[in-house]
Image (cartoon, rainbow, N blue to C red; front, top):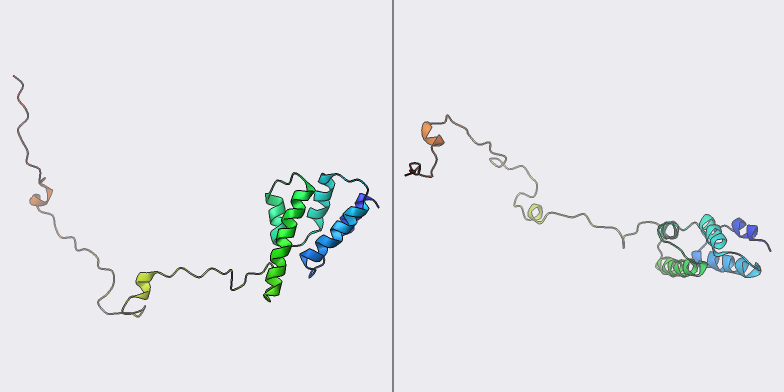
Length: 146
């Protein structure tokens, strides 16, 4: 079998990652000699799992064995998520972040209702008097030079 066959193996739309890995591994075993770079490139182009694609693109992969180990970990996580009745790759209630609520807002007596007399108060600025400009620090005469 030729290495070009690896580029024709594609992960199905709803195919679990573990099944795809098994299929890809069987095809790799049938090829007599193939470089790690070719195996990594063929796997990158054919896998559909978004999180795995991101990990493969982000990490430096020295060998295909390293890539296979990462893919197996993702396959185990995929199996776990499917076992819980969730769809892999979608945000679920388990992974959704709760909005950060301000504790002060929760404990307000009016709880967001308009209250008369409460609001922003503008400072009143009256006319300035000369006393407003006098420094509190007492002035001392300049030191004498003798």
